Length: 231
Image 1 (cartoon, rainbow, N blue to C red):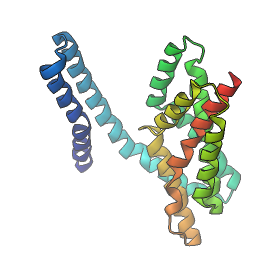
Image 2 (cartoon, rainbow, N blue to C red):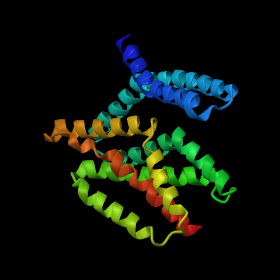
Image 3 (cartoon, helix red, strand yellow):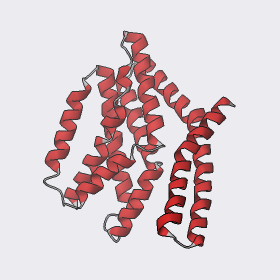
Image 4 (cartoon, rainbow, N blue to C red):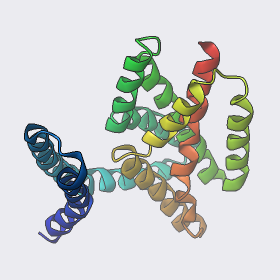
């Protein structure tokens, strides 16, 4: 019951300010038709209900199972299995990411089908999955995070000079949408689970599980830039 109350407060804090600001703008400046305002209010209600149920599902299912998988994988002592599981989970949670689907649809429409939604979703998913796998390698072998971040962003900076100009903003937006409500809870829980299991085994401090999202978001940027080079 406490979880339900806390989730309700989170949803109210997220949706209510936006609704209030739109209503104020409607009264003071915009004055759009009442039909449009009514559609917005109904949409805000549906979003609130969906967001509430989604957060309940995340707290009840995604976070615990992600952390549980992360804790169990290191016990196999099979590095390839841990890295492969990270890759596969990175692919499937990114494909399920609603933010990515919205972006892919918009780009498909703007490019008139030249960059199809399916190609973009698959490219972003593979890019993120590769870097989730790389993050698992980093956690397993205790590689310093800033080395990988510097190399990753240096690659992004250099590659930006060789891709069509239109692909540069698309690539950075692709990196942003992968840090959405589906991918972040699961991947972060997975990383923390793996790190906490290794900590108990090797007396680490457990911080290896963090920084994973920042690292993983480089993958989609690079993937879309490489897609731009191919196009």
